[in-house]
Length: 335
Ligand code: AHG
Ligand code: MN
Ligand code: MN
Ligand code: MN
Image (cartoon, rainbow, N blue to C red; front, top):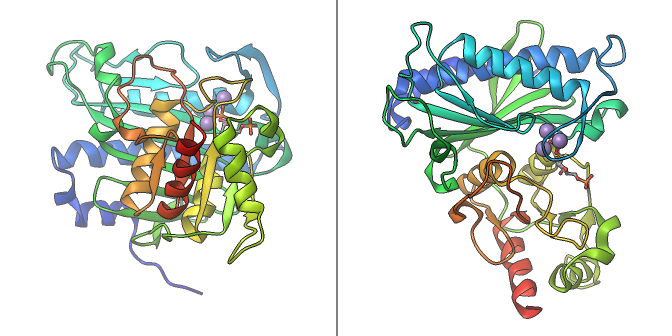
């Protein structure tokens, strides 16, 4: 058995200097995330035994049917973050508006906001496939001590101070960056501790996997159609392998390890794309870039987009740098 002795908690303490602002506060945010992740992981593992499968009969602000696990994970992450009074505001896929977090004394003294997709890959819950959690942390713009404002959340991805995802797969893995590379930690469920299992993760420069919902092919822009045909053409290391789980976190995790590209383009059905800029694209883009990969909307860098709405969507092309460059070439040629 491979021995991994360094825990996530120890790793954060050892690397405190990488948190450029306040080491204590960011460490406490991570403590909350890992606690909530363990609670969700435990529940996910019991899906089928406990009443957590299926929908709740409500729609979220994006018009998606909420699943029981969407609502459960949302509550667990929000409660954990609020109870520990470590952020001043929270945005979640499952909440229409941002949440203002106040201290017990009604203060607004925390410096960070968090944006999250509490349960990514909802359609995978009922079929026992992988799901995830995605999160993004920013330093607030508004003055400490005042209530949090909308502009604290509408910052470009380049302003992120930390981001990551938890993948509830064959094992539960937490992958994060605070702007100094990417590291992954695997949960030992017997003792409830995350151990460093994937140090210094890097996106291979090239890859042979492309991940896209090809059922939407007919609705894709011409540049994407041409790129998909290129992936399928026999030449050199092509045709590439097609792999699509239908969950951003698991699809990106596989491609990060093996080399590949994830595509969720605009389509006539979803003219802005489907993925949400603030709590899906930006955190994954930060991870990708920190691992040496790239993330683009087809023409320009995801993390430089200036957001205008909490739940705004954008097309997303993310993965091995040379593959993202290639799809951008195709997009430009077909413009
Ligand atoms: P969520 O479950 O958080 O709403 O996200 C679903 C997203 C993303 O995880 C995945 O990559 C994509 O939707 C899959 O969409 P399609 O089913 O349209 O392929
Ligand atoms: Mn959803
Ligand atoms: Mn999602
Ligand atoms: Mn979700």
